[in-house]
Structure formats: structure tokens, C-alpha cells
Length: 350
Image (cartoon, rainbow, N blue to C red; front, side, top):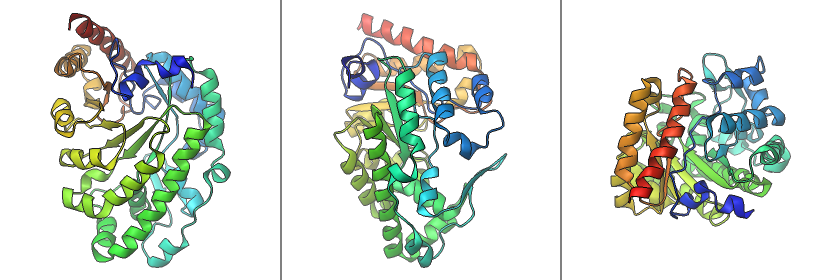
């Protein structure tokens, strides 16, 4: 890794080191809210879009350049990793991801395949190579993947869920089968994320997007061993961000499970959780819907968060979840500019 990357504001913050300003990047910073994204995607089906390296590379780099954020994140999705395992994935317009053969039986668990990620998903390292060539030399590239629980939950439910009925039925009724399934997804995630690291990303974010449906005891019993195995396997290679949503009560368990940076959604008080967990670095956690409000509201809410953190080292500014399609691009640009300017001011006056 070059000195320019190692000393970038984002990677310094990941290590808990002091920076001249608070680095910022945004979940789903390349997405449907941006006209340039639509110009590149056109009528390309979503799954094909993810699998076409030059298109994925272009929208990744466009978003970083247009917004002026301090890191780029690989344009991909959590779920294509399921295809090589034998699941039939598609993205339906107006519906989202759907799996035609969700896992509901022991036979389905036994039928899962563990394919080498390099052979089954070659478009990922190719996209990473193209992105790294185009990004400025001081802008890190973040790779990412789904945590075992979120991947298993999608595979079992087959689509988005409100009550996670099929997931919890398996958890509570057949704990042995549940852990066998989670072990499969843990191995797949380790292989997939290791491939990204070897291909040239400078950091990894692990998304546990559905973890909020669990309580503390359920997390400890059904998830923690597998999350720990994942984070231990990829520790020490690049900084790893651990992001979960939906239940602030799980913050301590997430921090204990692993990762260098604890990423929080907007339901948590960032500074309180930081103090309580003793995390080296934290990421977050503005409510993404604030960006749909007035420019004044964007600045005001961002200022509240930056003022609460003060000059403390190790904060990466981000949203508590992804940018939604209705978001005005100018509000996103204004947020990035304000975070840079205001945080630098706070540090100078400390």
C-alpha cells in the first residue's frame, strides 16, 4: 500500500489516529439518486450491472469524484455471493432481490455448494483492479460483503421480510441445522472478503443489515460464534468495519464480535456507544432521511453530531444506513463539504 493511501484521512481514522478533519463516505453513495448512475446503468438489469466490471467501476469512481468523499466503496451487492452456492437470485423491478429456491429444508442446506470465489465471481477482482487504477492515489477503496446472519436470512426468507418467520423457525426448532447453515455462510464470506483484500481493496465493511431482528441473548446464541469466526479470519489484513442495523442493544455484542471500526445506524447515540464499548474507531451515524430535508436541516443535524464528537480521533462520518433514491444530490454534496469544513474548524479550535 502506498504512503498516500496509508496516510489518508479515512485509513488514519480507521486506526483511531488523529486527522486534520473528519473523513466522510456514505453508504450507497453510488446509487439511484444520482443522474450519472442512471446514465451508466441505462436498461442493464441489476444483476448484470453488478457483474459488468467496467460499469461497476465507473459508477464507483463517479460517486467519489462527484461528491468529493474520502473513500470509494466497490459498487456491488450483498447477494450475488449466493448464486455460486446454488441459489437462484434475481432482482425484480419495484420488488428488489428474490430467491426462487429459498432454503427451507435439511436437504437444501446439504445441497449448498462452497465454490472458490475467484473462480465463481471473477468480475469482482476485475472491477477492483479497474477502480484502483482510476481513483486518486490517496483515496482508499472499500470492499464489502454480508455477515453470515444477513446472508443466511436472505437465503431462508427468499426476499425482504418484516417478521423473519422462516429464519426464526429454523433457529428455534433446529439449532444444529441452523449452526450448520451459518458455518457454510461464514466460510463463503471469509473466502469472498479475502478475495477482495487480495485484489486490492484498502478496507472492508461487513454488513449485518438484518441483525436488528434479534435480541441480545439470541445474538449471543445463534450469531456471535460465526461473526467472531469471520472477523478473526480477516483480521490484521486491512481495517474492517462492522456495520449492523436495527437494534442499539446489540452494539456491545457487535463490538465484542470483532472489527476495527464499529459502524452504527441512526438509532444509537454515537458518543455514548463509543464510550461504552471502548471502540478504537466508530462510523456514522446521521439519519439518511435528513438528506431529504432542507439544506439548513442537513447542516444543523451534521453539526450536532460533529460537535458531540468534537476533536476526538477515530470518527468516520457516514449515514446510519444508505442514501435513498429520493435524495437531492446537492444536499449530499453540501453534507460532504460541511463535514470537511466544520470538522477542520473544530480541530483547529481544540
